[in-house]
Every structure is written in C-alpha cells, then in structure tokens.
Image (cartoon, rainbow, N blue to C red; front, side):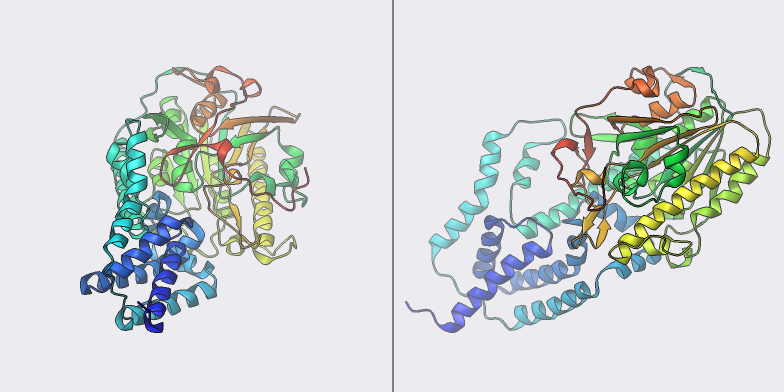
Length: 526
C-alpha cells in the first residue's frame, strides 16, 4: 500500500516531536525513549483524550526547557529551589536566561498548540507495531527485574519504574518522587529543630577567644589564585593564610543540600542515603560547650518558607540578616557582604569572658555574578560573566582581610576558617558558570585557615570529605566530642587522605566523586 505525502509528513512530525521532547525535558538521547514517544503518538494520537494529554505535556515540556537546559530533568535540587524561592529570585533567575531560550519556548508553545489542534495523526492498523511497542516498553524493566538486588532504600517497584524509558512517564514520576523526597526531608528537619545537640561533649579547651566561620558561596577553588589560578584575585589569602587546604570535597553541588552537611552531623541510612541531623550542628554544639554563638547572614531569610540554613542559624544566641524577608531578589540589590562587617565590629566590642563562635554566611559569588559586585570589575577575562565571577572572589578576599583587621582591632586572639558551600560548572562554551552535579569541579572548594597565634603557612594536599566536617570544626574549636572519627582523633595536619569520597547527586543519593566528569578551567596554570 502506497503512503501519501500527507501520511508521510504526519509520521515525520511525530518522529520530530519524539526527538524534540527528549531534549526539552533534559533526558539523555536514547533510541528507546525516542521510539516509545513516536509509537505512542502514532498509536494513541488519534484519540481525543490522548491528543489533549500529549498537547498539554508538550506545552509543559516547552515551559520546562529553560530549566532543563541548565539543570536537567526534575530533581530534588530543582524542586527545593521551586518551593524555597520568592518572586524576586524567580525574576532574577529569569533575567539570567538567554533571550533566545525564551523565544524558543514561545515559538514551541505556538507550534505544539497548532500541531495538536490541526495535525491529522496517522491511523495504525498493524498490531505487530503495538506488540513491538509493548516489548520495547517492557524490555528494560524486565531486565531490571531479573538482575534486581534489594536494598533498604530501593524497592523492586522503584527499580522497575526507574527503567521505564518513556519521557513523559519519567518526567511526571521525577516531579512526584523529587517532591516526595523534598517534603519528607523538610518534615524531618522541622522535627529536628525542636531538639538540641545530642552528641556528648567530653571536654572543652579552646585556644582562642574568637572562632569565626566564613561560609562562601559558589566558589570553585581553581578560580582562586591561592590554588593556582592565573589572576591574582586572592592576594590576602595567598599571603596571610596559615593553612591552605587543597582537597576539601563539598557534600553537594547546591547550597541547600551542601551547607547542612558541612556544619551538621551526617546520618547514613546505607551506602546510598545520607541526611543531615540538623540539631547536631556546629552552633548547637558550641552552645553546649559554653560558647556565645552568632550568625550573620547576607543570604536572607524567607520567613514562612525559610530554607534549611536559617533553621540551623536559629540555634545561635544572636542572628543578624541583611535581608529579612527574601533570599536574593531585586530589593536586595545593594546589600553586599560588607554589611556584615559593622555587625561583627559591634559583637566584638561587647567584651565578655565566654569564647565566641561567629558564623558569617556570604552571598559571595552567587549568580548573577555581576550583581554581586560592590565595586567595578577588577579583572578582564574574555567575557563579562567570568570577569565578574573572578572579581567577586577578589571582593570576598577583601572581605576576609577586613574581617581579620576588625578582629585585630579588638586585641583578642582569633582563628578564622573560610570554605565555600559548593563550586560551579562551565556552560555555553565557557561563557558562564552554573550548578551541575555531574562534574568534580562542582565540589572542589577552598578550605583556608587564619590564626592569630601562627605566623607560618602550611599547604595541605589531601582529599577529604565535607561530610562530618562538623567534627573537624569542633576539634578546631577545642571541643572534644564523644565520636569515633578521624576528624576528631587527629590534628588538622594529620588527618589522612580519604580515597573513596561520595557526594550527593540531584536524586538525593550518594555517588562516587571519582566517577564524576572533569570540567577544566582554561585559566588554571598550577
């Protein structure tokens, strides 16, 4: 039977739609995904109910495309950002999206509406095609069923559904499962913050009066001169740091997942699942150890939908936010990290006998980079985004310098540690940097110490995990906890290299750091 040009054209459109939707939803291009979508369109597209379903799903795919372009399919990081973001930050996120992505989205929506209203879908009478589609749909799940090995965190049904490679099913299931994980974790965190520290403290012998933790934002260490970057954007840290540690691997590639694990106890369910025990955090431990505790933040507090980090900050005796009701929106412009310095000066002016723990949470190098800059761009790289990013790191170095100067002014000994929550990965042929869990560089962060009682500099090159860093920080503060861990049992210089580090991916599961891809920095010269 000879096929008419009209029928061939409709088959071509259906095949094109199948290829396109896989890309729009952020999934890897696989022949089974494309074929399953194509066959579902030509077999079911003639029915009104399925035509409506496909039409709505393709419009949703077009709307999701800008997110998929930067962050991939739905995951816990995307869901948490969705629920813990205000309209100002939504506007800022949209302002970073290239105009052509909005244009593509708009044109796609129009095209999809016209196609699913006007296109006459092919009529399929061949039952063998339906049988072939069912075999294709069931091949991977059946194979997974045969090879399945149960674990406490992964059931047989999960394994089977994970292997259904039909884009719409994968997309809607990912939305559901990621949302479920997010809300379960949020409920657990809310229950935890009603508790106090439960880690027994054996002894407290601080060497300094003031301990200051500076948590940076979105800094990968190979963009810092202190770690070999070719532009001199960390002159103070390079010259005055007492310890420059090359090898700290952040727990996750986004703030909301990484910071709680960096400063709270990590609880492992098995080799795939880890959660932060929020009540056992460095602030609550310091409280129990008799420290006065302070949290100074330029990251803002969202109030009714406050994110995880402010829940930890609430344990401090004193909280200061430059932005009370927002995280990072248009009304926060002009509120730079330097606004934390007068508060630090005020705290140190209040003389007291107790040792202090002060945490400063910076906006640092959060995207949009150019909006982070308080001063002019200081380095001219090949595009504005990267120039602003490098300059933002220089402003953080200047802030650390000012912090040390304030500490010195008050004539009290101190120890300061600076680390970043996570790094970033290049995008658009090195034109930009964004969150991406698939690259090692998204986890390779600075770890730098400044000490009023030391005049020498040590450089340590050992890979260590950001999980359980709360033990290392407690040891640094002279607090001995009743835990068995190499961070607690060794001096800083004696902590051994950790060969099998895992990070948290965007499914909220542990993944081997060594299996991640590399994203080289073209300006790195070490």
